[in-house]
Length: 225
Image (cartoon, rainbow, N blue to C red):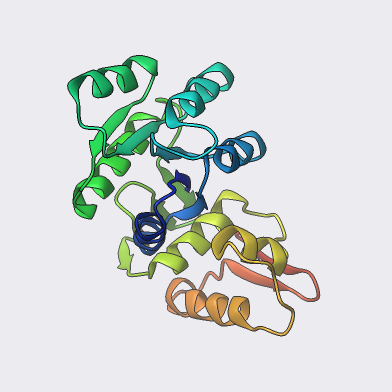
């Protein structure tokens, strides 16, 4: 799942990006209101965490722009403005949650997960499956043949990407940008190492292999009979 943080406080922004990244989310961080709005126009996000007092464009204006364009994306205000009037204003403008700084990261993470769960339509599944492999997006659990598989946050994100785009060959450059939020460097073996580790957990203990290498092109996850 992909989140956008719009936060001009460097320490807070970096802290959120690292914490949410370690929790398994793909995170973009914008330092100004204009940069945040530009990303929102270009990308699709599952949730936005928004400060109010921002340079160039404040959080109220960004939220109004979001709601004009898309009423469904969950938005959480994370701000030092703690007056009741500010909280009411944020919610009436269309925010889904309002958390006041300073905050506990565990509470923020719980609220993020709750908003993501609420934001899904009844028809939108939170359980991704391929053959006997199951990935629960909310509980962050993976299993095969009912056996639990423990993955790191990055391994979970990689597997989620492969399952969401099953039967599609994914080049290393796309995997690098989607999972590591970085440009692919052909000299690095980060992707190969990550796929090898994921295979050792998801495929090696089982007869039916699901992750396949397509020489010179990338990787694909699919059931082959």
